Amino acid sequence: MSCRPVIFEPLEWLYVMRLATRLLPELSFHRDEEAAGVAASLGGVSIDVLRDFDWSSPVVYMPPFERLASGSVVVAVEGYTARKLERRNVRVDVVVSDLDFEPDGVWLGRWAVVHVHGDNYWRVPRGPWVYTVQSWPRGCTFNISGFTDGDRAVYLAYYMGAKEITISGFYPHVVLKRDDAVKRKKLALASLLIKRVASRVSVGFL
Image 1 (spheres, helix red, strand yellow):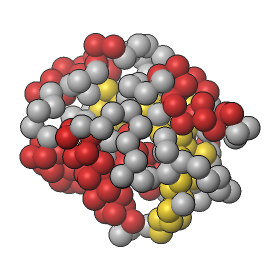
Image 2: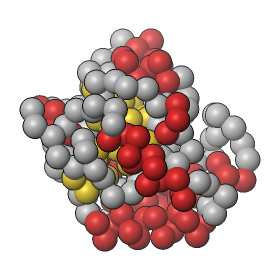
Image 3: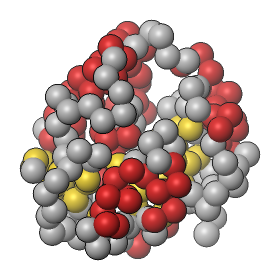
Image 4: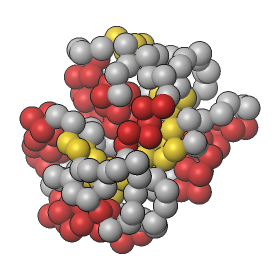
């Protein structure tokens, strides 16, 4: 399958990054271009492989989830969540992760969408993955907007053509990995971005 870089909605990406850089100036946005170059060198696969799934009614599971739902495709946010779903005998179709929460779990999905950015690019391995970036894409990389793994998974479902999205486990008050000011600001941004997607397509929460 041929591969060319795609940015799904340039104006949305610019809006998201303007919010993110204003809210989280301590992050390494200045290295995002370098990160995109590294991602392009990793030999990823085309995002079109994801179109083999039925995206009409995806379920997006986030790390604190407890409730299961029926849907057309199962999306796990982070390797941690993929392992948790595996323990419940749920087969994961797509894992969305920047590899900072039980990264080995991304192999449990049929496909992984791995995000490469200025704070992780030196530790992202080569894999048979879809690589996303948060600058202009190049090579075989893609920009699907969003900022955290959770809201990026929701944007992905929307851009893949979802008619309705179910989200299980988006509880901004529940912090699993760490509880600090940066994490709290990321969760606040994720909440705002998910609401933006919810203004375009039906989104339900469990």
